[in-house]
Image (tube, rainbow over all chains, first blue to last red):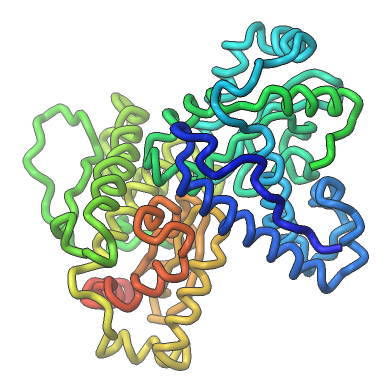
Length: 217
Length: 227
């Protein structure tokens, strides 16, 4: 079964005014679509890998399970496909979310001191990622929350990641994610992101991650 | 430090620095564009230049100056700071900013209004010899730009003997740190083309090659590097 470009969970204008409609249209319809096409093309040569699913495929990045010939293509495009599928779901229309669950809030307070401290650390990770990449909030192997950033289309599920974790929230800081509206003002985009976080999805991600898993994408 | 030519990276003649007060404050200036910001329309818009030069390039210079203020590197020129901060592949925090200042100056000077076309003379001979044809050079240069995943640069480089090759680098890395002499570059960070081309990086690179390259500048660099 080839990978398929998922539909956006909302109309392309749903995240206005924080993310503009044109960006959503191009980001989903062009950038994400290209990652899907490219990872499918790579897996044509090794069809037995298609049965892994996108999460397990990403977990295999950096191991011998992925044939050398397609390793970089899978890292970049399998990474891109996971990252963007995950990303659309952790966002929602402004004022459409009731915030983090009590359990998640407690875990955030435990790991970072407060919600504000967590956001500061996340914002710093997002702003400090030089070049293209992502910022992540995730559950580490010891069950605690952590924040990290990755380069390009890497993610913390992959064995190549400096800090491995199961992501529960992520932010794309490739320039294509924000340039049309924010240009060089990445910190403004990062600040705006908090208005559109889909905490219900993040709560689900946290519950699943606390049990070592991820909800279906 | 084989990459240094007389201790300098730069291969184009630069004007002498303005008289400085006896206490240097900033080592690195934001060099003005070599042309008006609308001079490369419609291929590279005025709006792009206002952000790319006026914000991105400016920020690299400002941030570098903050990092080196009052320190040893504040007394050095940009080329020296780039090579020193590369630190043999274990770059210091100053490298990203210093190299990006260098790269952007080099990029602006790689373009001119009514650019593009073809080189002539020894450079064209070298291109035909080392790539087979000018078209094949363009194919390979475009492929390098298209396949530099994420942010980075594509380069035409020469060695001292005039042997040409194509290089691609991520983020701020510049081929001088790998011992090569760049003579042409294209910026493939998305900020270089997103306002004008959005996701269409291949179209941007094609237009850069067809309409923007200053082959005079490239030839000049080639001559100096192989002198």
